[in-house]
Image 1 (cartoon, one colour):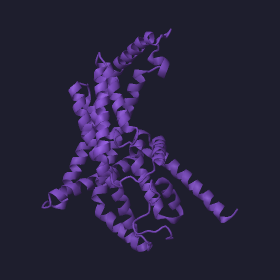
Image 2 (cartoon, one colour):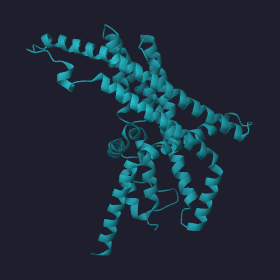
Image 3 (spheres, one colour):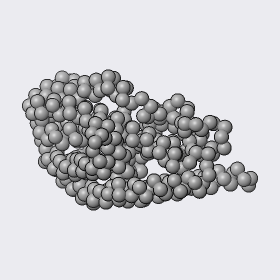
Image 4 (cartoon, one colour):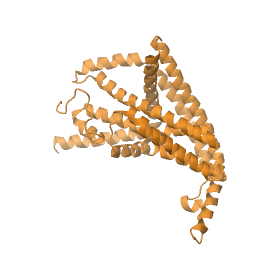
Length: 351
């Protein structure tokens, strides 16, 4: 066996082991990655506040930004946990409402036997769903505690991390210092997270006004859930508009409230996506659309809904890291949208 075949085999084995480690270590790695994303969001918030409050000490701005992000995350978790419990309680009413609508469509479609929800999607066990939600909330709480601990240590160790990166850069003697590569990666991810946070807040805020105006129960829960789903490209906003519209069918006797909620969210997302997002996005996401779908499927398989939430930032990191090494630059080119994932100042012929 020649050297190339041996290297290929070792590469496949290493990749398989890495994917296995990501899958089995998910309970430990997911809070760490989420803490890293929150730390990136804090950096963006520090820069935003610092540009508008130049006289403030940097440590005070950092503490303020960290408190805002931490309290916001904790409050969102509490609202999501309470809203999930309310959603489970409302599910029997929703199932009955959908069955009624399906039976009403039978005569209109000249069907001998009107359809029911169980025949379409199978038997739905509300107690099983409630048990699953309770278990998920418990896992989320333990993950939240671990994530906050990671988050605190990441913020506290920023200065030490900078010194370590500088020392590693001097030790490696690479054409591009490790510190510069890490800064480039973190800047790209930071810009992506900041843009999607701002646009998600706009979409969720406008949608909340629509849901509160209609009188939908758990409107705050659906608004926060929609904000989180805005981080998932392609399918996030679609799911975030369909689900509350379905629960509106179970709450109201008519259907127009459901249509207004679905249409209002879609209009808000369309306006933001066409008018605001292009102005903010710039070059925040240089990932091929096919690679985006693959990333959603891959990270969703490994880490579930959290993986779908983190799919694009993680794929951006993989692409940028692969662009740093000549041996893996081909993968970065395949993942990129413009076939140019290289670092500034790094040409394709540099080894």
